[in-house]
Image (cartoon, rainbow, N blue to C red; front, side):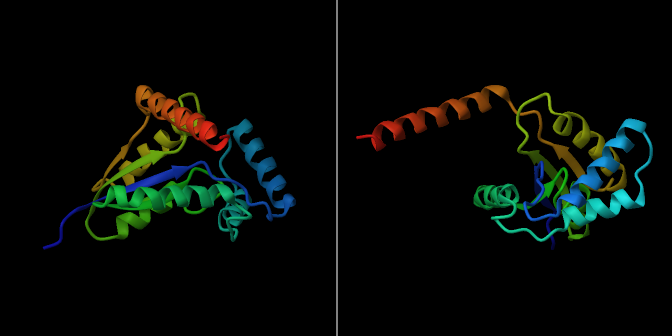
Length: 178
């Protein structure tokens, strides 16, 4: 008998690869910003440029951010043994949040998806507005799957993590200088 499974999507911001021609980026940004400012619908040209950017072949050298997020996911995997773990990106990289959810939805027996972002602190439009708005629509589309958003982070836990990291770094600096 198959058992329902839970999945985690680690969401990063996404970056533009260094070898992507600047003309593509400039044209996309110009279209995107003017659409946002005017409040109009997305055009097929903007969608095409977005897909070109997202699906651009990347290496750790051309996109260290994507490589870094995937490395974090690799380190999280053994800590999340009972979960399927995927990465997704808010912008500029593949897959999108929707594409990651779609892939998990097509996988048998995924009954719950928990999204967690690397965008830690409050005040960011991606983590506070865009992702929750997108998830509201995706919950309707994938209504048989429980979709949770593990955000905002507990500020005391994050402060402890950061403070501990500083103390470890300080200790290593003292040890290294001896």
